[in-house]
Length: 336
Ligand SMILES: [Zn+2]
Image 1 (tube, protein in one colour):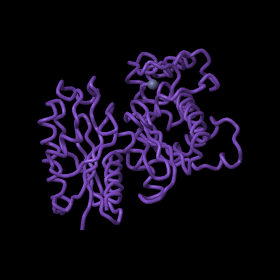
Image 2 (tube, protein in one colour):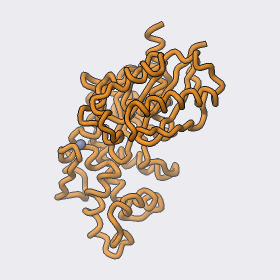
Image 3 (cartoon, rainbow, N blue to C red):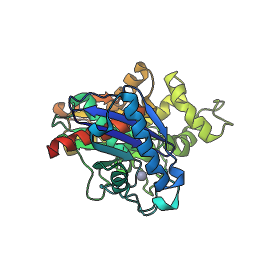
Image 4 (cartoon, rainbow, N blue to C red):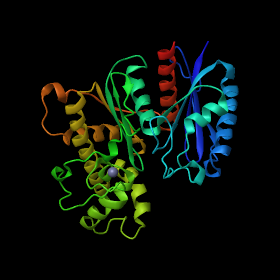
């Protein structure tokens, strides 16, 4: 029986999973191995191979049964897995610049390797949860973390684009001036744009723009006198418990996402909208409130458009490895 592996390489840890031809994951929880990415590609590729052998042993799998390996990493990287010449913020070693990590891993493992960036892998996992691997459905996923990642799946296939920048949803510009309560703000993104989705809807946006904007409206709030980065990390928990300032911040993020999803609805007419990431790793009540606020942030729509469901993406920690495995299974089916 042939199966595929999914490997999610982060700055500090590597996550593994396996997926069989029945679309069943063979590792239920997280299997982690240290990445050692700071020591450069030669050390790190060896680590990936060592961890894969350990993961196979843990899952009771013969490594020879692994037909294709799916690999995902943070970008920027080309569609075929060549890391940016300027290097990656997560892989701090000079030898990573311009490194073909897909080809490097293929040579190390002696098996075919396919590549995705972590946003697109997360989007595939979110899509798979709703539609399975075979369905030709269309979905848009937005994953709210430090930045804003995600991806676009059109009729069952992930959009990587010409240079690997397909699905860079965080840098799509929004008419954010229509969001109530943020008159006069200038939401600056690290990419250089003003007013894109990530500039409003990310942990970075909370510390950089939204907290400094709202804090003066709430004199005596506990966030006064805290380091802004420390306060930013408290906002989700406080919002869940009903703190008015923190709720305002999440309302603005949800309305930004509503505007963005409306743009995607008019572009793709998708079967599903999916939201995930640390921002909504909360209880179901807060998730339901957030989804309703996303809807509240959308402009008036045709009845057919207003019915497109908004789903919450499960299992944040395993999303990358699972998405990479799903893409590897799709590739296996294309080849056979
Ligand atoms: Zn941006």
